[in-house]
Length: 88
Figure 1 (cartoon, one colour):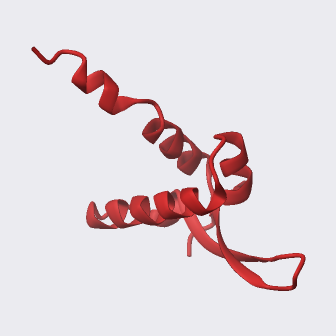
Figure 2 (cartoon, helix red, strand yellow):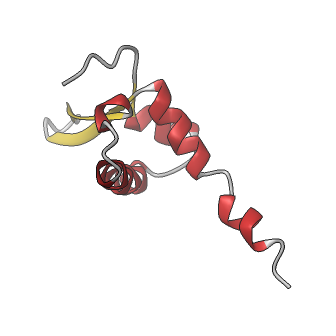
């Protein structure tokens, strides 16, 4: 795996974008699939990890790079709405 440098956890990113962590995990899984299909290095954006809950349960999360944060932000910017504005 490549050295991805400074990262945020998917829990932190979910809080920043006001989204439930579970929903963001689904999104990130979809994004990693899309990136993989395009032969783009997923590790430049996301790296699967785990954390331990207060109940001592190991749960999946992702480490998100700056590039990954930008990717998530781009996906949340209403691109679809902009595409639909010019329909006649």
